[in-house]
Image 1 (cartoon, rainbow, N blue to C red):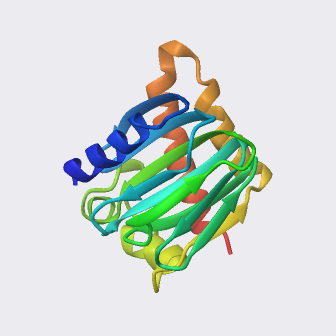
Image 2: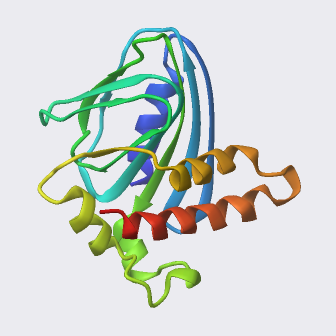
Length: 184
């Protein structure tokens, strides 16, 4: 899986426009990437189909359009977010209709989440199987307009004070997973 992330990161690094990328590992199997992309040509992605990796994308500002060879299409504007497994987007391209995008990409290894969840999730219904069945079953993509509680979580990921940033982000990711488990 690490090789696939490296391929994806290389695609973003080769992006022709301006870019800022920061990835943080929060827990085993859970990472967060902050993206800021401006200008440039659409990006084409090609990676192994990773059915066990849940990808959560949140748009903070700008717009993004995602076209997948699976036939799925996602369009996100500020406050919107989407969930899908990385088998759905193995062959895809993204474009920024307004010329800029700032967002968050969260990757969750569903197998690790089920076998070795963060301690705070022990005994909850938040498992890899549960999230897969709820949001990704049948190679589907789920796109949602962010509720106030979800938007507060994503916004807080950017605003965490320097000295406690990692701990704060870890808590907020757990909060996000718990809230996702309650969304209808």
